[in-house]
Image (cartoon, rainbow, N blue to C red; front, side):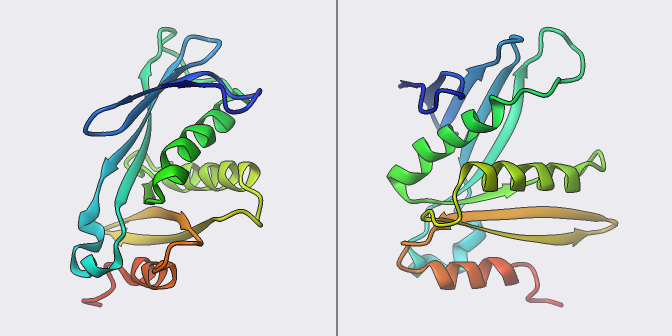
Amino acid sequence: MESEKSSSAYQYVAVGGDCNSYFFTTITDIVYEIKFVPSSEYFNAYMDLGAEVFEMTISIADNPTGGRLTADERVAPTIFAIFEDFFLIQRHVIVFICDSTDGRGKARHRKFGHWFHDQNPSTDILAKFDRFVVDGSHRIYLSMILSRLHPNASRIVEIFMWMGEEGK
């Protein structure tokens, strides 16, 4: 499936597969891969919620320049168009974990938050919830996005906000 959801977004291709992959190429030939990896283990103890959970990853599949990425105003609308294509039709719960291994997790989390709020009007049906967990000396930033229309939305949010706190 190819799409041009927004005039400011790049065309993307839905490849599918086990990781529900999507690809798009920027004007500078940078190839992005967006994956929605099944991750129901986040809510294994709560199977009655009826939540299909996916971990969303955004990665560079090819950078022919080998250099640092330059700002590209069309990347965020493209990622959001892909997100809508995958999410809105199927009404899944998405967990986005910001890679913090290089110390830039907080910056990634902030950037993702800006993208989401810029692309998603506050009156829309999608809701985003943020938190972090401490793993040793690192903070891991998490976001969860789900439809406000999900029949178990409030319970899913409550579980997400307390996940990992049980033993503390």
